Amino acid sequence: MADEVKLLDFWPSMFGIRVRIALAEKGVAYEYMEQDLRNKSPLLLQMNPVHKKIPVLVHNGRPICESSIIVQYIDEVWKDKAPLLPSDPYQRAQARFWVDFIDKKLYDAGRKVWTGKGEEVEAGKKELIGVLKQLEEVLGEKGFFGGERLGFVDIALIGFHSWFYSYEAFGKLSIEAECPKIMGWAKRCLEKESVSKSLPDSKKVYDFAVQMKKALGLE
Image (cartoon, rainbow, N blue to C red; front, side, top):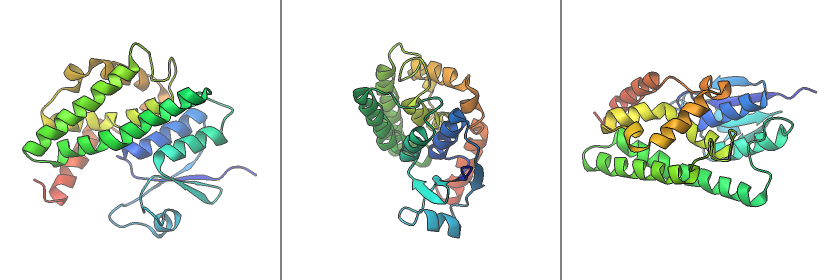
């Protein structure tokens, strides 16, 4: 029986982007199901009744939630092609640590930059650049975080790239000037079709962020 794979997602989500890249890397065919997060579908509520969030991967009728868990699941199920996590247990643990770091630090810092006002924006900018500088140290002189090929940490971080333009525009900062290694790494990631075809246009994300600010009364 062929695998039935569906992805419940929302196009600008940096977390959904991860899953799209992982599926593309593995060459897994799937049905993309765009979700309206302000009017959540019965399917989303059924498949993720705990958090009621995207992304959700539905594999042969069974849901897997939380983007980093989904990417690990994809790596384990479709293991015949493009391994995403290292085979060494210590290196695998390190990769999971840095993905957890990205999840806990980067999203909140970026959100402060594009939704905040005054001091909150300044605090967000400081946090954002601090997080990216720490990640630059982890990257070092390597092509990718895991070495010479795209892996788990790269997939977790590159989803934020579509939001960099928005962070720069709202925060009046230059990520290129502050974190040139990260931008060099991003260019290498974008050379891969699995990445470039999975990332939404940065200007489109910015327009979405502007609309969201208005809708949330943050203008």
